[in-house]
Length: 394
Ligand SMILES: Cc1ncc(COP(=O)(O)O)c(C=O)c1O
Image (tube, rainbow, N blue to C red; front, side):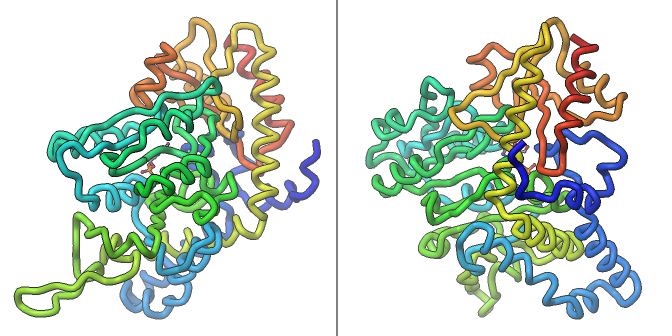
């Protein structure tokens, strides 16, 4: 099928979960490769044997590798990377650091994620800033011309997702970045659903801040997240929380915040998970993001095509460019019921409900969709088997 550049058999051998499940829930949490699992369990064992602080000291190099790996993956420098608990916390630590004033405008997109939008509402309520939604174009992606028309000196932030939670849409991140840069506005990109499936170069995109997560397409452990903040922006953002890792208690009445992106981290962390995330990012780089993207987008296109042939099934993905997330509805069926029934047959998907991306789902009058998300280790045979299962429920 034109995906010859990836050794799928090796990818599956590296992935113990492939033997047990048909995993189309990579946008929820992908299956970890055994390299990640082994590195994490080894560290947990070491903690139990010699003590947590002592294990961290002994494995200092292993815990540091995640910074260099993430920087390589995103095309930035190591001091622009912070490792936190998840994408939401990464996003929050940067967003809540932006000093909004009454009348400031926050521009976002129709498909924005629930947690981000809740934060917009909270901050708007506290500060008098306004949240405004850039309309979508005919493909369903953010309309860049409309964004350009909305940008003025009152816009303080452009905050959008690269890929939304509820569909295959890929927003035109580079064009959005260009428009924001030309207007001199901070650009915050939510890459929770894109990092690990799309080649992502923060310099090319031109974002000032990027937030992502470890467990989804990066195949890292749960409870891990990555934050990129551009060098020139770091010192302008005072994190909403500070501790002895983010800052130094320099005198009785004075603290000094550290100069790198680790000012957005906190002191105590899950070292095994941090090591695992580093291994996961290195593992992703090892496959090559261009090859991963070709494989993932190709497999998802096949899945969309096959699902579209099933009577009663409607594929729901928007976008001029579509990624590894495939969403659909089955006439007369609740997506949660489909999820449950597929799960009982060993096929993992999720149900994406309206409130996870309310603006978009309400506009399309959708209460929910079934979300089937593929990764490079999935196969054409799994796509066929999955569609046969769906056909029995339609
Ligand atoms: C588009 C989008 N942004 C942000 C998040 C939040 O990521 P996390 O659960 O790691 O905080 C998600 C999670 O599903 C998401 O789909």
